[in-house]
Each structure stands twice: as C-alpha cells, then as structure tokens.
Image (tube, rainbow, N blue to C red):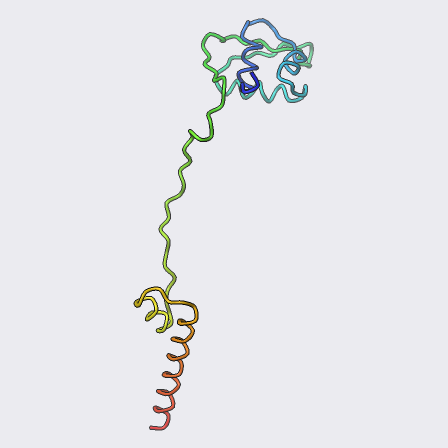
Length: 136
C-alpha cells in the first residue's frame, strides 16, 4: 500500500461520511497538521464536497458528503506510460558567409585542417586580386 496516492489515502479516511478529526487525518497520511488543508483542497479540486467542522474559529475535523460520486485513482500513472510531447523544431543551418566554407559544404565532409587550408587559399587569392586591381 505504499504506492497509493495521498488523495486516495485521504479519500479512504473520509469516505465513511462521518466527521474525521484533523489529528487522525494527519496521522493516517503521515503528514504535519498544517499540511492537512492542502490535501483537503486537492481533493476538493477533484470534485469532493468536503465541509469543515469547527469549534469557534478552529477547524477540528472534516466530513466528506459525496463519497459515492467520486472516482479517485489509487496509484499515479507510471511515467513511462505518460507521453511528453517535445516541441518540434527543425534544425536551422548556420549561414555560410565565407566562400571557402561554401566550397567545403558543396564537396561534402571536410576536416578542420582542410577547411583552414581552403580559407587561407581563398584569402591569398583575394589579396592577389586586390594587389592587381591597385596596380592597374
């Protein structure tokens, strides 16, 4: 019974329809007294009609009014059965600005050394062409 959810444990404690003391709820769920309202609220969000029994301003117990109408799961869903959708993104190619890199991409896989060699050749050609245009 260690795999039961806290909501189901709380439901089991309250399902008789009788008033259950806050101390007993905390003991059954193995939680602190100030955490009981949190679990009560979580059960209310699942459709439970729970009223608090008070002595003046202090809540001393809780009573479940619609136990027959509730369907509380006993165990959590296994994380391997829950599908998490990942955002679909298409990998974008980086923009190629250098002519040598364009040539390398066209020719296929190029090692880092070959890419550096192509770059240096391209830069040498640009310097040579620049020198020629200045000389003219």
